[in-house]
Every structure is written in C-alpha cells, then in structure tokens.
Image (cartoon, rainbow, N blue to C red; front, top):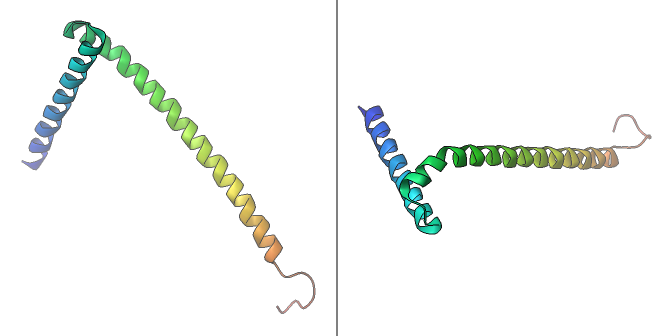
Length: 89
C-alpha cells in the first residue's frame, strides 16, 4: 500500500511540476500551452545532455583535484620519512 501511495504522490507532484513549468514558460514566451508542451521533449533532451556534460566536467575536476592532492600527500610522506642513519628507527 505504501508503494502505491508513493507512486501516486510522485505522479501528482510530477504533473504539478510540468503544469507549473508550462504555465510559466507560456507566460514568459507568449506561446500557447500546446506549443510549450510540444517543445517539452526537445527541451528535456537538451537539459539532460547539458546535465550530463556538467556532471562529466565535475567528475573530471574532482579526479584532477584528487590526483593533485595525492601527489601532495606522497611528497609530504617522502619528506617526513627518516633519512639514512639508524635502520631501527
């Protein structure tokens, strides 16, 4: 029963979100609701593609930062390592 309630709530929330978007887009562009709805799939694909590109950039930046930090830690460990002298230390 909980699943169906969640599903219904999600559907209603999604429908309300689409209706709000269509109304605001129509108001801003002067297009009819039908025209805005016809453009919605193309805009969704464009938004999905842009989100994917941004996510990939964020991942690349994170990996780059992790490599830099790893080199800094390695450098700090090498600098802190005992040099020569007594092998028991």
